[in-house]
Image 1 (cartoon, one colour):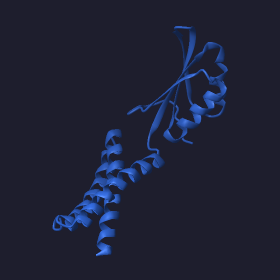
Image 2 (image 1 turned 180 degrees about the vertical axis):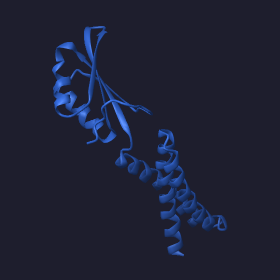
Image 3 (image 1 turned 180 degrees about the horizontal axis):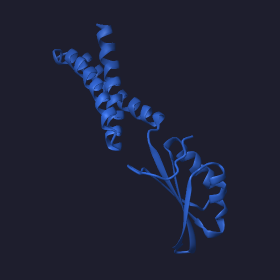
Image 4 (image 1 turned 60 degrees about the vertical axis):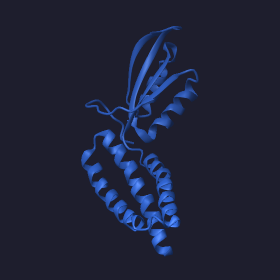
Length: 168
């Protein structure tokens, strides 16, 4: 009985974690990998569900099934964060007098595109930097160190082509 409960619990953690990653891949448009993950997700789910459906009057099995789901949500989001799939567009708006920041970032290997803009407080410089997702916080922190008043927006581009992308 204890092995069955452990199986149900860990099966739910696995299938919900896979479901989280699958949904991220679907949103990003990676249908093939999402479909493969979906196969294993539903396989594990069906086996675990089969162990519970015949025992709906057993509150322990039902509780373990639900606890596995809730922990699976946590583990899935943790896993997705660690995988850091995809890219981020870091858009930075700074005063024109801070233009040396763009050169510093380029020297560090980051792809930076700039253009001039006008804000409420006068002339500005806008920097666009598309990087691997796991580098976004590092770059944003570096920018804040150099220019604390920088306005930084981090976005997730769904699709892009061409250009120079850092592969660090």
